[in-house]
Image 1 (cartoon, helix red, strand yellow):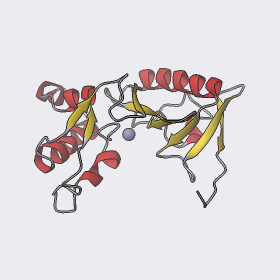
Image 2 (cartoon, rainbow, N blue to C red; image 1 turned 45 degrees about the vertical axis):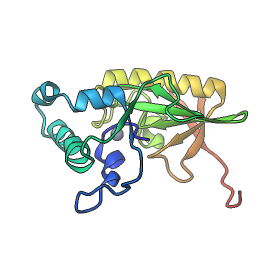
Image 3 (cartoon, rainbow, N blue to C red; image 1 turned 90 degrees about the vertical axis):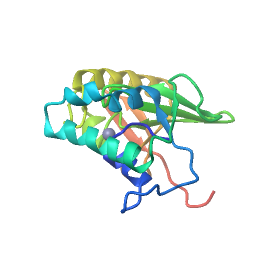
Length: 186
Ligand SMILES: [Zn+2]
């Protein structure tokens, strides 16, 4: 289940010699992200080395490596039972988060709504160079953090320090993040 096409979220789909690392896996990708990064016209518009590199890497992984054998999924749907895809654009044009539900419990898998929470949860107005559209990314960040703090929904963040799971609370200038207690036994 892919959230967006930055290298640190897709490169593990390939082995070091550019073969599919998980040949029997079905790879699900956000439909909007797929359409954008596979669009030659969008690729041609890029002016920065960083963005040209993001496009080139997405093409390397999905076209050359996986031969476009992916299944696009839509926002607002459950690509797999219990996992709802949520539009959280700004970081990339098709950036996606998820709500994972089991019984009465759920967790918000934020993907890259924000990076290091010590910096960007505390200061949601700070912009990180990896946010492709920083103004939209900030609006998304505030909307998501308002929602999860009001609903007391736990958040999983790929770039959060161990255990990668936290509760967010609103404070005077931004939000506080409180790491979830971790228990080594299930
Ligand atoms: Zn990213």
